[in-house]
Amino acid sequence: MFYTIRHITRFTYETPIAESTMEARKQPRSDGTQRCVQFGLGTNPPSRVMMYQDHDGNIVHHFNIPGKHARLIVTAEALVESQPSPVLPDRLGINAWPQIHAMTVAGEYWEMLNPSTFAKPTEALRALAGELKVSRDEDPMSLLRRLTADIAARFAYSPKTTRVDSPIDEALAARRGVCQDFAHILIALGRLAGVPCRYVSGYLFHSRDSHDRSADGATHAWVEAQLPELGWVGFDPTNNLMAGDRHIRVAVGRDYADVPPTRGVFKGNSAVKSELAVAVSVGPARLAVAGEPLPFVPWMSREASGIQPEASVIHQQQQ
Image 1 (cartoon, rainbow, N blue to C red):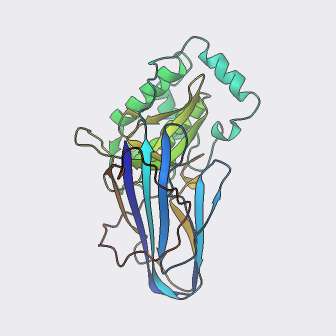
Image 2: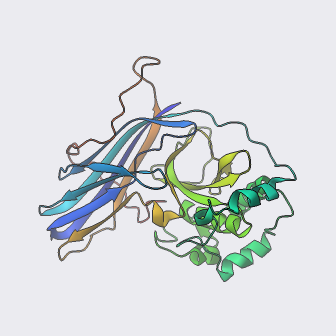
Image 3: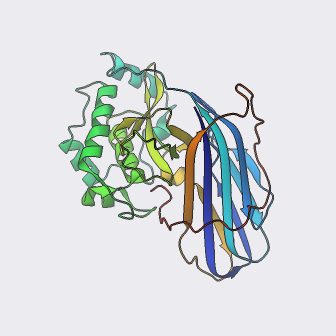
């Protein structure tokens, strides 16, 4: 399946700023069953966009706008090919926990096993772990499948309940939140059990037959766990799904702090009128000629095409 993605982020400042420097993690990854066929990122005001690959294999674009400007629009467009995921077992064998120990004892997955900025074992998290009976009495796959379903059943999906920088305890106390919160909760529970878990930012294609809770027209977040003989396996606690070909992976990290879609600084005395305005569209696509590969464009420097239509303000990009 081929998908086209358009992700627009707009910043508006109360008074013109003198300079802004920003990086963006918006390019879908090319690994596993997914391939980014084509990608372009443009800014308005225009700038020269450069790129590098971070230690987790994410593609990061960065740019600097030295002149005065009162508004910044960042537009990313991608064409992605996503193949169906391999059929996964419902459970793993009796040797799964010893195999995980053997994988992790050398420290290779240290970062994905220990507390991070937003995924840490607080008192509220430990209370939930007790409530959900998080233990090694069942194999890792069965445990993570059950926790994914439990989070979907016990937590309401409620945009704007939390902020992009909300600690995990806010969603735990309210029993509601967004995909970012649910991913952090599952990551913390999985790590508490000793399973290496990481945060995935990306997009979810909402088909007519799907019954997803997550909002259309926004970015998405889910979890990947390192399991014996399977590698990184995706779990979507927002929608109670195993990650599949509708999940388009952009970046991976310990938690949201590692992979925000945009991050930067500006010079000047101003404030952002609305924290940000985001518009995301994901849809199916077909190649012009069957089997004809399109050129891969690692970065493009161009001016965004005109003023984009008004987008609803979403204070958290991961909603």
